Amino acid sequence: MKPITMKATTSPRLRSAKTITRLTGLAMACALAWASAAEEPAGAPLVYDDLDAFSAAVAKIDSGSDALPTMQSYIAQASPGMQIFTSRFGTNAESMAEKLASHPNYYHYVASLHAGIKAEKAELQKAIGALQSGAPAGVRPVPVYFLVANMRAGGNPGLVQTPEGPRPAIAIAIELMAMSDDVDLAEFPKGPPGVKRVHLPAVAVHEMSHIFQMQIQGMDNYRSLYADPARSTNLAFAIREGCADFLVWRATKMRFEDRYQYVTEHADQLWAEF
Image 1 (spheres, one colour):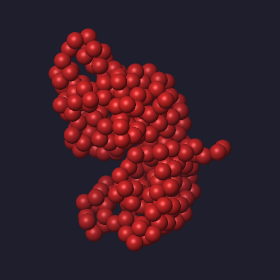
Image 2 (image 1 turned 30 degrees about the horizontal axis):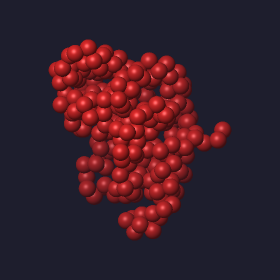
Image 3 (image 1 turned 60 degrees about the horizontal axis):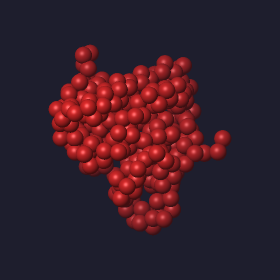
Image 4 (image 1 turned 180 degrees about the horizontal axis):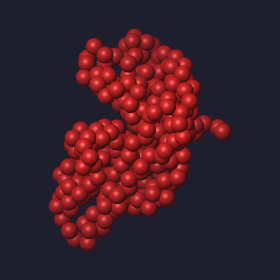
């Protein structure tokens, strides 16, 4: 199958940390992990409740309700996955109401995607299953929560509080995974914010690979990359993010093409940063 290429919007600094994998030969390290036999994939719980809730909230606003209290209710009643965005990325009623006001056409378009995204559940399960089928025995997929946030971040793994206690999960904000020919780019003078919706499986696989890294390494070891400045090196980020991107390609035949292009165009600069 011919690889599908895609673009992801990242800052040059993030690209420096995430795209230098081509310079460091990280595919070999990822292939070693892929070679381990795995148990039959159990399937990842895919939770779409927040997409339905957001669509209903937008319809309520269109019927005359104030945006701020409507968004307060949307966030207050959201799934555990919303915790990742409220705690890290400033997602709150105010930021959501502001985005609805500044990008009304786009957020109405996003609100219309819930049925189509839910219809792609089998495709997503297949992609995550392909990832697990090549992972070491014992790793398990975690719930993936799909929601709408404030265009600060796309897919993110993290710990969320549940009735059973803290649990690892993935939250994916679809407004950064929703580009298509139907999008009115007049609201985006700086260019499209994110990747095409067709690449949603690749985003889910990328984030699930981080969950598998966490399960294999242990939480404290995994988080030390961010908590310990001595370990927050370009090489460390290249290994972590490069392995995730490599596994995306193995599982889906998709890749973040702009990262490869950035490396080619900035090879000398990246080598100097190393």
